[in-house]
Figure 1 (cartoon, one colour):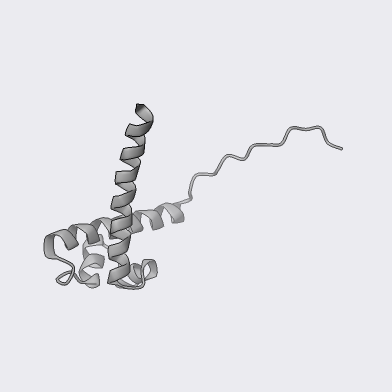
Figure 2 (cartoon, rainbow, N blue to C red):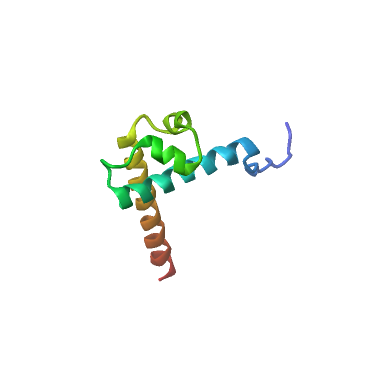
Length: 93
């Protein structure tokens, strides 16, 4: 029987491919949010979101099934920002 202490595994930092994927996701959501606010949902196309995010249309559809799903991602990202801020203020008191 081994008496060695269990090794604690620290998560490895994401590799270049994963960082690139996360960067694209962030750009897509950020651009979609901006365009939805500026132009409205109906006047924003997925093609325009991809172009402004500097990704191909296929890349956008690899992340989301349709424009509606992209709108929900924008809502979720905004909600997470608000939640994080609220929790940070709550823990500071």
